[in-house]
Image (tube, rainbow, N blue to C red; front, side, top):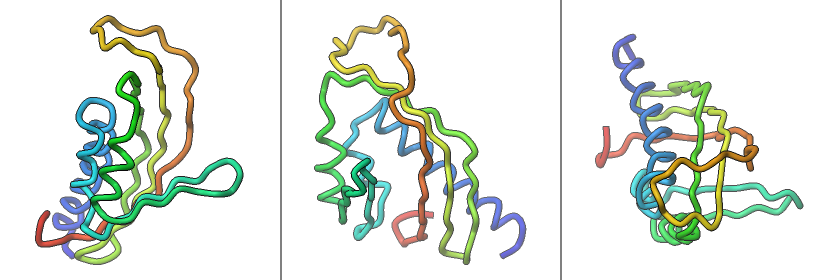
Length: 133
């Protein structure tokens, strides 16, 4: 890959990470499934060492769409480091901090923040398909 192709691939992957959190926080959470390949998966570790895993767009739509309607959340993403591994694949590590208020009435007034409810990192794998650039 030439440097411009690599830069464009990195930016496209960064944009997917940001689009993911925007859809979760500001849009329709179930729509994040459209950002995954048809056979895409999401894994989330749990404190007891068990984890949740959803595979395929239908399962992802159900999982992400099941978030409570009265939940207000905002995720802060940083340090998005994309590594292009081939012309059609890449990986990324991103830091996130999640703020959340349950029982939000949907009003437009700013909500006083509490401490973050989650701090961690996402480990993503990207694959270019005919559906997307």
